[in-house]
Length: 144
Image (cartoon, rainbow, N blue to C red; front, side, top):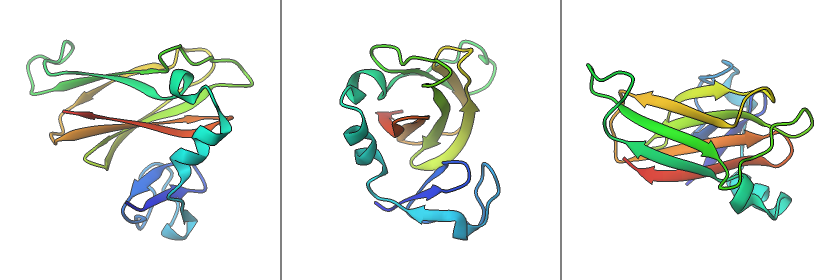
C-alpha cells in the first residue's frame, strides 16, 4: 500500500495523494510518497511498542449519542501512557475507516494522550494514526 504524507501538517493518505489535504488544504504537490513512515518511527524509538502504538477499543454502542447509529473508538497512546511534556508530546490523533480519513483531534502537553471518536461511518476496520513530535507517525488497526 502506498502512503503519502503532507509536508505541511503531517496528514497521512493511503493509496494516492488527494488534490488537496483534507486537514490543511495544501495542494497535491505538498505530499511526499513515504511507504516507510511507520517503520521509520519504530527505528527512532526502541520503546515504540510500549509508549507510541495506539491502544484502541471499539465500543459498538455509543454512550454519548445513543439516539443515532454510532460506534465509539476509544484511543489511548501507549500501553505505558505516552508523556505529554513541552519537549515531547503527541501532536494529533487521526481516525480512518478502511483507510479513508475521518477526523483529527489536536493535542497539547496540557492533556492526556487519549481521545474518543464517535463514528457514524461504517466499514470493516478502523485505523488510528498518531504523531509524536520527536518520534513520528505510529498506527494501529482494529476491526469494526
